[in-house]
Length: 392
Picture 1 (spheres, rainbow, N blue to C red):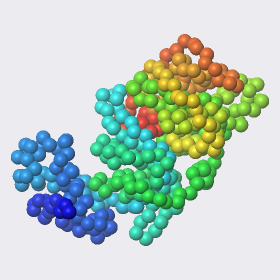
Picture 2 (picture 1 turned 90 degrees about the vertical axis):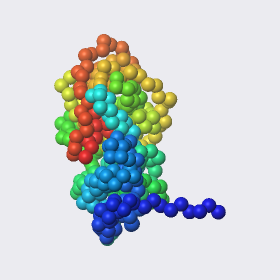
Picture 3 (picture 1 turned 45 degrees about the vertical axis):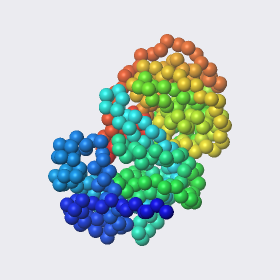
Picture 4 (picture 1 turned 90 degrees about the horizontal axis):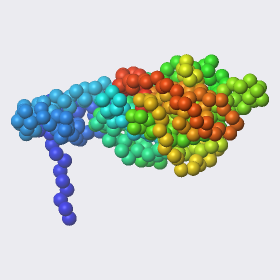
């Protein structure tokens, strides 16, 4: 029988300095014991970004280096103790791994997650609601095994419980995703309870005022596909119709009959032509290409699997922006107008639409280059609803 390996202990100096914070965390229910802080210390001691400084201090076994590592731990620990901790039961709708900032020369790994969840405190269980969660840089690895449609339990903080969509944050050194069995409510019922469906014909008069100002769209897929942006990212695109765009009056007037939308690759790969969807999206209009949408979450009401996706080039666009990708005319999609949403989007050149979309080659319009904004605090990134979420 193999002897049990004892957990490493904190160096004497570090233990003395960290003990008050460990006691405070245990008292406030933030962590059950000091093991979390010990693991945080040794993870910082092994962090590649700190190795040069630790070596300059004589190595991790020297008192001065141990003091430095303790200072680093205290930066995270003091912030952690100021945050309210929640136990979250999460139903993952979408999880997207991205590299943000390629065009600006500052690539950063990120994961964007959305779904529904239930938060618990020591004395209350909150009603189920939608949530968003962003992971950046070193925290990205926490979500390596996270899967769409999976149910997980985790420790998180939350910026504002009054928001329609909860903005969850990771707790450094504490947040882990563990699979669990949990009965979540209907996704469709949750969306319908939170938002009224907006007809596509009315969207242009009710544009989103921010990255979290959503519109609920119930529509049928006229086209779905996967493309590549110039920056090397893949993105999905949908063309949607609903009853408001298929009236005789709309057809005879020559009005736009499709909503062009950017979505995740997984959405485009799951829902083919004639699928009926509930889409939570943000919308915008551009002078050149008109109305477009960025789809953040999708519930399939009628699911038709698409054929194997064909990857095409998205044109001269540096961002995953609906307006930009829908402006290119090399796609096998006839478009009425383009658009872009909050994060990266895609564009296609506006073209008049027939009932059954067919490719109509035409000269590629000049695409206005949009610089990808680096994530900023309290705001979403400027690339794509997923790509451009902000880091806090």
